[in-house]
Length: 315
Ligand SMILES: *[C@@H]1O[C@H](CO)[C@@H](O)[C@H](O)[C@H]1NC(C)=O
Ligand SMILES: *[C@@H]1O[C@H](CO)[C@@H](O)[C@H](O)[C@H]1NC(C)=O
Image (cartoon, rainbow, N blue to C red; front, side, top):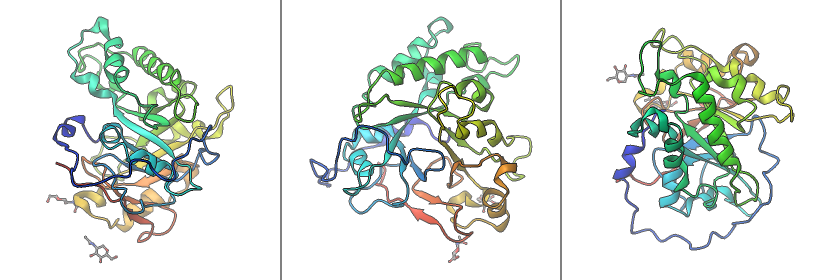
């Protein structure tokens, strides 16, 4: 939940750019690619629309998580990141801030129906080429501490399970361009992981390794809570669900692209069994309020595996 949708109002489509009216490599695959499995390399860029006029990097990313509203405003983006070359078939997840329910003046009795209606029914996620929905801020019940009704809805864990189940069922009722059900992801909300594992299709986690000693007490490590997602041992259908892990090391604050040795060792070089992120798809992103085009993969070394996905200017 690093970003809000309000900034989108400031977005305007650049008028000087001529986009191809038909993306040359666009193809209508009829199933998810075999690469859609735990550990698949990915990239997430939601601060600004991706600039597709040159080769979009990193090319090894086979799953792309992009802002849904950018994709509506720039319909050229999804075809270009889905099929960047004739033989490449990437999976696209569309980021939507479901937590916008926070802003709705609904009363308790209309939750979650109004929230779902407002979040979904006007928007053609499946039709524009999204394969799945990365729904941020589903963990509204975390906002309600005992005795503090932060959301105004007296939310309980059971409400949230019902809410997410309804959203996921609705997504699954829609067909993507591939002709398969639109997927729905769990975002954070680790206390719900053991129940939502049966309902969702993937998970996107922020800071599951904790904060490497920063802001003591704010945030516990919780990667372990999602380790069952990737094994396929818990679900009755045996499906292995990809888990997309975003870490925001303190040393990448203020736009730095150089991790300190301590952050590198902590986020990239610890035993995955102990951390609980075996087979997760991990990215290091800037610690900021914005998920921009910069990414580092842990697979290489402290100084390697860094990329900038080029984005369009905002506003
Ligand atoms: C980022 O900038 C703030 C304000 O100048 C500073 O206090 C902080 O130490 C900086 N963080 C890093 C990692 O350099
Ligand atoms: C990051 O590291 C590179 C070389 O490894 C160096 O050229 C650059 O100045 C460093 N940047 C910062 C902000 O320290």
